[in-house]
Image 1 (cartoon, protein in one colour):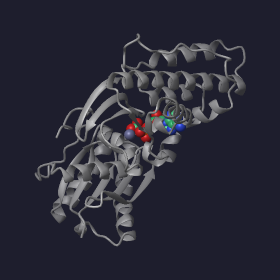
Image 2: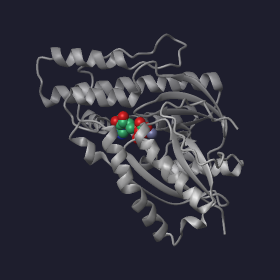
Image 3: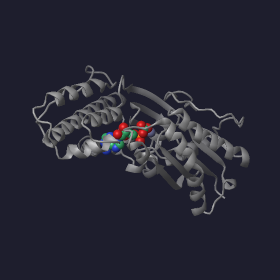
Image 4: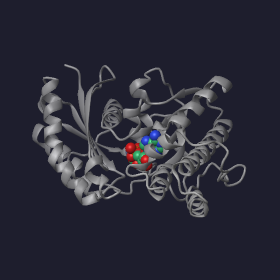
Length: 343
Ligand code: KG4
Ligand code: ZN
């Protein structure tokens, strides 16, 4: 029987489980339970509620996935789980569950950096992707450009100095009273917004910088909204449109700079904001005009999921990289991208 990895994701408000076949290098199946409805009435993720809901769902979600694939935990070679970064209580649930299963079935255990999971996610539906490539990770907590030379060999070229792109989307959406989660809602509204009614400065931070700064943009939007003569839907939509244009222009400019620097011909985008319609459209234009191959995961692999954790676990297992079976439940809520990642 092929060696299988069971993947678990519980870093924020999604409980995810997945099965990855190491020897076929292929995702077998995965499932996701989203807590969005639970947190919606509070306008954001409530950490304590998130932990409790992970506890409520993790065993039954795993059980269902195993049953529908006619497997049991004893059939697995390793368990991979997200060890950070993320909400401490939420991470603890996945880590404790993974360690308990691995201990009881004597399986290998692999803690995964959530960010590595995101960056490798495009391999799930683009097996033709090869190293090296440039990766733009744009999520609720991170915005970074990474030089991905090989599996486990990552150099951060630039990152957000303040708000992440997703955070800017969410905060701006909240300001415009668009509800939760705001990023996708703001983007939807932007589609109907009139182009050119507003112009916001692009936060490029000088001509060579590969870093990002989106907190000034958020404040700028607030001022524009407060001063707007009309607080109607059309004004809101036009602001949303220019906000999205500003973020996407900035991301594209930095991608272009990083491509010049690395001379790479491949770009990968990952993280929740990579589901953004305008960003994907502009990247396809880049692909057509500049002969750059762009790899964008399908939407369900852009946002948090366990398939990417199982994939990263599978690659680590192939390289023989396991955590000690000391059954300590280690989590790293502030885990840096480059920590514990090298081979
Ligand atoms: O990767 P992810 O699911 O969770 C984190 O690890 O942060 O990313 C969530 C972020 C949120 O900020 C959400 O507003 C944003 O991704 N997002 C979007 C879109 N869909 C999700 N932002 C802009 N446009 C979208 N269509
Ligand atoms: Zn994420």
